[in-house]
Length: 148
Image (cartoon, rainbow, N blue to C red):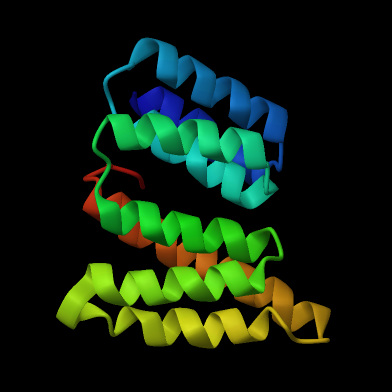
């Protein structure tokens, strides 16, 4: 899995969506019981805003009992990256419920989500990167994925 993780990271840095998808497919075939390939598939779907792919991986993640906190964060990111502000804000309400007393993370997400509405393209790009990086770090830790 170590080499597949590194290849995933490399293909992602090179912005090679087809290459990343190939790595995710290989991970899924070699490690069919792991959540890790499903997470990477969902993350790629968030970045590319591919609806069918996202929901296919999400369904598998539900079947394999991915933690609800990871799912709701990925749902939020997917809706926001797909340009569905209203649906993303509904996800924030669900995040508050799922996270309980630890919903302070929502404040950061609300702030970043607000920047998605900006007319300044640079600000929107920075908001997308901050949101994806933040959710990625949280999910990697939650799923105990060793990613360096």
